[in-house]
Amino acid sequence: MTTELPVFPIGNQRVGIERETVTDYGDFGEPVTESVTVWVDNACFEIQTPTEQQNLTVTTSEIAWAMLPIVDGSVPAVDEDGDPAPIAFLVSNPSGDDDGKPAINANAWLWHNGLRYAMRGDAVLERDIRGRDDHVFCVCEREQG
Image (cartoon, rainbow, N blue to C red; front, side):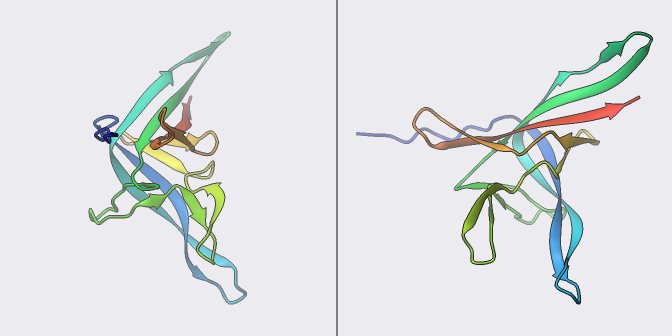
């Protein structure tokens, strides 16, 4: 007899995911994009390295980890109006099949506490010991100074 483990929130934080989304196509078939931000609740956002010192210069560089929930292959997100706007983990091609590339990739930005962080690579789908989707792991960075 197997029993499904309950789904627990990863954290109690809200993380924004900003991506360029194709909204239309131009006269010559080129994609027209718009920056769209969606929000993910029950996420965990942890800052790993807050400061770096190089001789007399101090550069503030924050490297952070974000762990986002995943349900049925999609990150549950909402748009600015609170309407559901889930992000499928893998990008779909025009035929509807996934092409193996993560939708949250190195071109995305993450928002946390009003600060914008650049992704340092593509998101990774982490699985539990039984092989089930557990969470989406992102590494991001913000610099100032």
